[in-house]
Length: 127
Image (cartoon, rainbow, N blue to C red; front, top):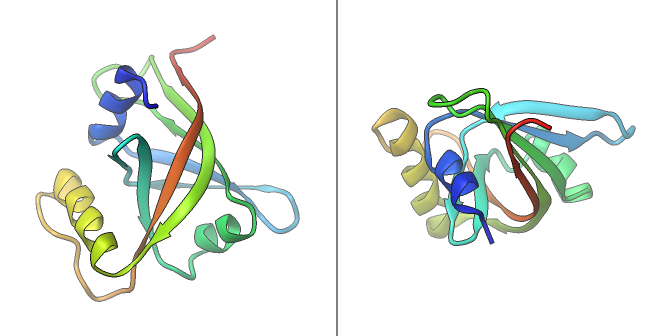
């Protein structure tokens, strides 16, 4: 279950940074748009992107955000990708996330999927 402070940050427009594990065990991190779907965290990606390939092999993730309204209270979440959505179900979430960040639906030029993350640990603030 997402805590209210974590949900508020995820529902805002701060960019998240996603960490995954490369095949050689080293970290890989990228900034991305993020949102919520029920009690889970969602983000979009290309189905053959580096992050998607990493997560299909090892579903563990770490996410961090520095909320724009209080960047000194970062939000850190660890969890696992427990589901991948594609097709109409994915595009509904993709458009919701895109509208939040840009005010417009996501362009349809590229194939996109949604990764669904089950949060396992959540923390707000330093220390």
